[in-house]
Image (cartoon, rainbow, N blue to C red; front, side, top):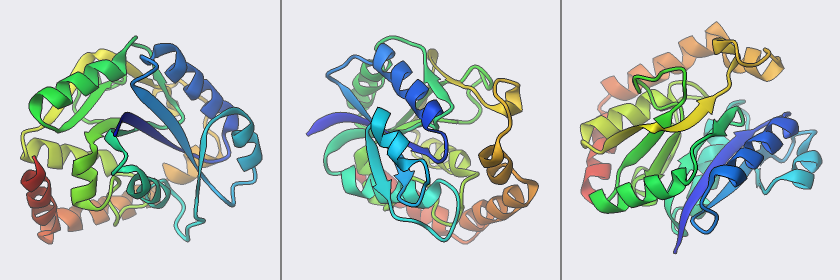
Amino acid sequence: MDQLLVLCPSRGRPEKAAEAHAAFGRMSSGRFSEMLFVVDLDDPAIEKYRESVPVFSASPSQRRGMTDPLNEAVALYWDQFEVIGFVGDDHRFKTPAWDQIFLQHLELVGGGLAYGNDLNRQDGDIPTQIFGSAKIWKALGWMALPAARHLYLDNAWKVIGESVERLYYFPQVVIEHVHPAFGKAEWDDQYRELNAPGLYSEDGAAFSQWLESGQAEQDIARVRAVL
């Protein structure tokens, strides 16, 4: 079984994907990890992606956002890798051998969820990227909260990780989130659409329903059973 796979959903931003892939290449240990960009088949820029980065072609979804393509991809690979992670195309790896750090720790504890310092939320209050044991995603049947389209996915990871006491924050592992909300990038159409107040309300309600319906407790029990 291979060791670590990073999944990176992206749409309409092949140049950002190339930058993210270059940072991954500079900072990874090489033999330990791979990075795959999850790109919708109907993305007009998909050929530009294929020219510069490894691509997983996701089925077009009725719902815009990263949940559906990310879950399609993780289901294909959770039997092939020990750890599967998520970053956005606006994350930048900045710590050498970050992958070895995560892999060694998750192996030592018998599985869990790890994340690094995004230089915006340096207290680690929320995992804006995540690296989880593949057996966790397989037990859940998903990596991104299915009821949400794009947002509150990190809130769900935090709830699950803390509930099973296997959520690990590494402040020394820097994976910077170069997001316009922090003044580090320009707002484009993708950012505007997927950070709109209406989507925050919609996905926030989906997250609350997951918590209040008992589904979260069932999902946590599934994770606990494989750890």
